[in-house]
Image (tube, rainbow, N blue to C red; front, side, top):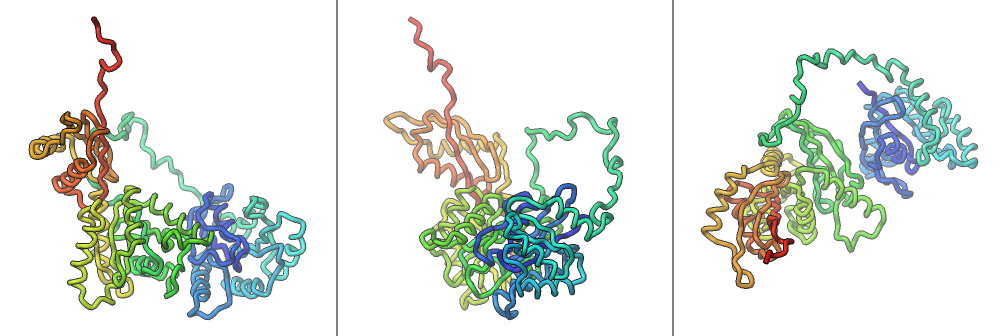
Length: 476
């Protein structure tokens, strides 16, 4: 079992930069502004021959427990409790500050193995601060530069010395027994038949992104789903900055939940840090399968909500609406009917969109929300055979044939599904460029009704068959 390493320190010493280097990806937001990181983030990491789990934490600050800084500090204390080894980071250029000394005492009292790291040691100006780090009483400081990658071999050796080789390199069991003998497997047996339509896999891991405007209750909703205070929450708007992923089990199925920063109107986003946060949220949408749009039930369907929904649909993700703060509604039945009617009217491109009233504070409606997510994911993955599609197309053309354009009737020959996630279809016709958009919408709406594809985007592409005689001159 890999060990867990937590990176601890006061704000703006370079914890997220080291986290990104160990993880091998630019996952955590990095900026010169102190206090960028607020939630703790976990990811698989590698340092030469060491494989482990690394935890990025918020900067330690002295503040009351009811304040935002106090709640951030509690998240860091949880990371210390769960870690096997702690990397305590200080800024070598600034030297050992009073906050560093106070937090070093907290780390020492935890009883966990500690590696003292003096970051930003790439210049000669940092030599004095590195020597001063001895006063922290945490052993020999390791001078590194997380931004430039200097000192990583020394950091690797210090981690091995702090934890012990037995913990860092557990004896690997002989994996040869896991592989069958050559005679047990036919060559090519593991290659799937491309013509076979696979049924929906209920056990496959599910990726869900939770998006919405600031202060809609996204982090509170995820905490309610997983049953623990994993993400930082509070009455302040815009607490979440990074896109944080949380692994969870729901009815035996692995689910990865992505919490994202609140998305305001583009004209209001001026600060560089907020732009980075929104870009991180958009990246989470692109990598998700189902996207839960959290709307504040007291002020739903503002212009920004519709723009977020339109972005998700254009990206081809499967949307689900969660009307949060439902415990504040006085006439729930009447309002729910009005909101669902408004969703059908304002988002016609995903007709049948599933919407669920929930309350993240009280836990109401969470099971219904998860069931709506799974049902939408099943539709998003669905496939329809070519035979069924063309029998449907025959009836559609008889009922409402394509219009005549420039005095010539458009001919539709056949239809086939070329992809799922979301369902995508190709229609072969005589003049694709002349096909009216209204007729394409007619085909899309009828496809949705005939094959039960509610609430997901449907892609329809038009193409024409090649004329083998198009480039030949006529023989005289």
